Structure formats: structure tokens, C-alpha cells
Length: 142
Image (cartoon, rainbow, N blue to C red; front, side, top):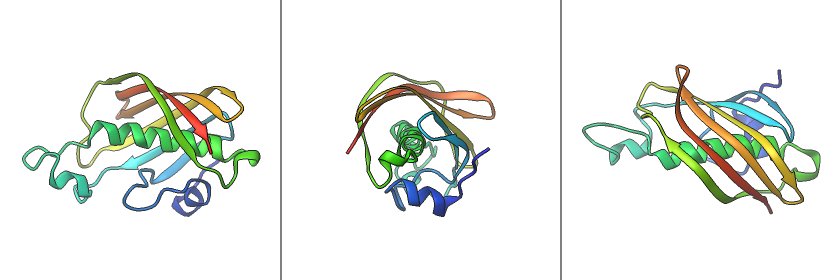
């Protein structure tokens, strides 16, 4: 297994606080997949307004966290080091549950296709084995 801590993640992807949504990578294979985690704390800035009486992590931020896991897989390839992975598209996105303070979100993105600067990943976020978000993400390497 290839584990990455927060400093090693920052060597691969350009995201930083408050927009770095990965806490660690449990395993990854360059160009193939990445499995990471986001430990959700009540202190996250977005909870102040989403929603004050029922804190819920915005679904789009969960999708972004999945994209960052995919970016670790894509940008850890030698030919992509130092580059940025941008969103090219989101297909078949489904929100199946809420992410709330105290959740440990498992973020898995498998790269299913790559041609030149484009890549497609199958992405799944889960909490305690329950899928909360699934989507097909398209990346553009720049």
C-alpha cells in the first residue's frame, strides 16, 4: 500500500487550506486509483452557513474531495508531476446521503480512461460503508 500524509499530498496537488479536502491517502497507484479520507470536523468553515441548525457538508465539496483524490492518482504519474488537474465534466452524479460533523469520508476514485491530457474517473464517497456520493469525473491536465 502507498500511504501519503498531508505534506506528501501537497507535493502532488496544488490545493491548500481551506480548499484542500483530503486528510490522507490510504493507498494509490499512479494513473490507476487513489483512496483517501476526509475527517469532517464541526470546525469546518462551511458549517457556519450550511446549515446553522443542521450542519451538512455541501455535496459539491464532497465531489471536489473525490476529484482531489483522482488528481492524486493522475498527477502522481511522472509525466504529470507539477501540473494541475482541472474539472472537465461531471456525469451521473448522485447524492445518496449526508456528510455531517464527525464523519470520516472514504474517497475512492478509479481512473477508467486516459488519453493525452484527458482522464475519466469513477468516484465514490462513503461513510461507514454507506455510499453518500457517486459520480463519473472528467479531468483535464494543464
